[in-house]
Length: 400
Ligand SMILES: Cc1ncc(COP(=O)(O)O)c(C=O)c1O
Image 1 (cartoon, rainbow, N blue to C red):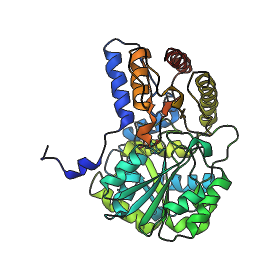
Image 2: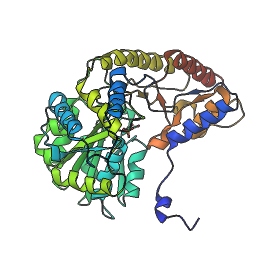
Image 3: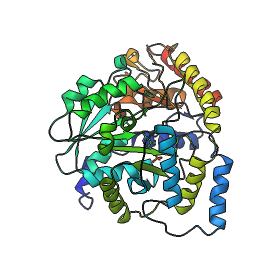
Image 4: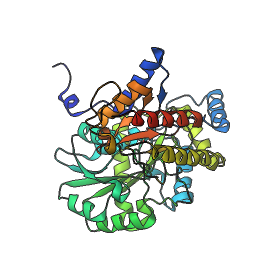
């Protein structure tokens, strides 16, 4: 349609949202569908956080706030960065946005000129390349295979850097693979980046708290202080605090970048919800003890899913360090025929046939830049996960 902007030609709708919608449609039509597509915890927002929002409403904290966040939340974020990441930020180095998504988007819009390149390790979160395209830049995907735990290797990073590289986006633990970089693995990457002063680091630490088996989380600016002045450390309350609907994300970074991002935000959405900001103050300053409680459940689910999927014919499922995703390969099913008679030629066919035959909704790996594979979100009731894995085993067993 010619009325629409040419920018739309550069952007794909979200594959993860598409799967969730399709699963909802089938459910509405009476099918028994288990949706493993959506990336949000099934746990409710903790009660103390909800109460903080209710108190904010009752106290009339319902007006516009500073565009980049209320001072109380900025202080809570500064304290969090200090406490958990040994990073020292000042208030003018912090921005709060409407979800981590808006913070990332603002940073790209505020910095990219036509032709600027952004290195994105693949598999990647679906939104990175689309945001880069919307902001007018060029994404440079670098394939990171299961052989290396889906992690960017220093030589591959070095090879992808050009004079036009503006950002590298790192996401650990990762959506979609759950892979998380150890201190040593991240240090090997920051050693490369130190040599290339034109390259800035956008680190998406959204899943920081969701790590298992004594894994220790670290972030690039903490590991390499020489990168502090060209790193944007992005985080938020959506995942660990079960606050996906509240829409609060934040970042710490150099003051001129934060100022530019604030300008973009001031002319688009202004401040994030005042009520949600007060809830986020309580999330960051309040008790953190529910996080290990949730993680115990997530770890059990991860182990259950990995073990059951590895018993499905043609599926190979690595055990990731964090987040609430697994990213199994379905290479062993390609070339086989589904019960419907359809030949499975790629991972899109695999997920479509799985949904049709067994009512299990997962997302095809090709949407994340590396197939044939699929992503399962295990942020779902354990009983449903077990049933879904049984159905996947049956589906694979019925392929001919
Ligand atoms: C890797 C990653 N970054 C950022 C986000 C966005 O988080 P928010 O809901 O705070 O916008 C998500 C959410 O799915 C994510 O998976």
